[in-house]
Length: 370
Image 1 (cartoon, rainbow, N blue to C red):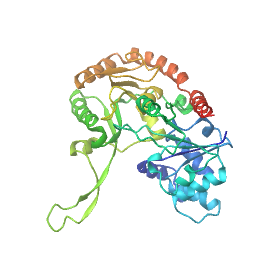
Image 2 (tube, rainbow, N blue to C red):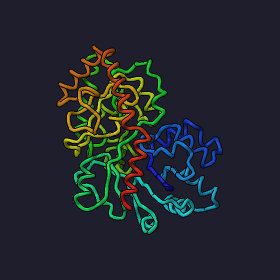
Image 3 (cartoon, rainbow, N blue to C red):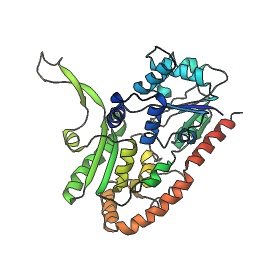
Image 4 (cartoon, one colour):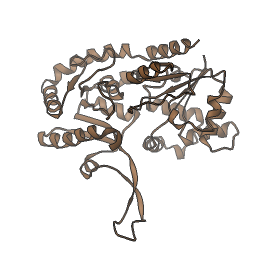
């Protein structure tokens, strides 16, 4: 089975990646650049197992990374700089059996050329938690980590399956000896989706400062055009600025991704997890896997968790800020004992959510369509 998988990268990550590997100074081939991306760990929980093995029957790319996609086009003798046209060309050249797209929300007239192919199985991933998920009617199969989505789609006659993130092998080699961060929070800051979570972040800043704990905050902000000078007649002078309260902007460090994120988690005793406005009772996101998998103690909202994640055994839960703060103090006071127990949980979940299990679940879902 030949599979083409494409994922969208965050723009801040691409800037960080290009500087880290001096992309502008090196004439990397498409293959060399792609290998660096995989090594750097971005989205490694979602890349299917063959992507780490240079499997000739597997094609992986970051579809919105211009440098990468332009390099592929150049090597194939194409002059186009349209990212959608390049993706269509990759499908035409690779001729996969399965098209696995993590950005169905970005589909358009050009990309519909892929979705109209009759002998191609179209699979999309969607875990953006909103009140009512789209059906993605042009796809044969829908994957998600959010169980209510899979249930909703099936109830309406659309094939779907749960495909959780998986622990990549690179997490096993992280240095667990240096724990110089007491509490870590990372993720996006967005008022539309995370207003409740944003309030928790604000309280964490104040409380950690009062307690004298080393709290690190890494946020990716949404930028909007704002007037440089709030004076009539000069408001047309604008620039892109992050949308967040000044207190959070002042405290937050730059966003982190991939290997840098995993190494930062490994240096942390605790990772605090909070969810979006539409999650409801179901609590699943990347931090569940990344925190435990990279060696931190996870403290997360009370609710229904993925299979094999046992609350107050594999991680701790909280109902409100007061309980969150109590749990943080309890963990830090008894850290050696709690950390030893966490290693057992990590080993268990690493086996349950391995790359082998993820790839097998994907193949089984494809075969179920026959």
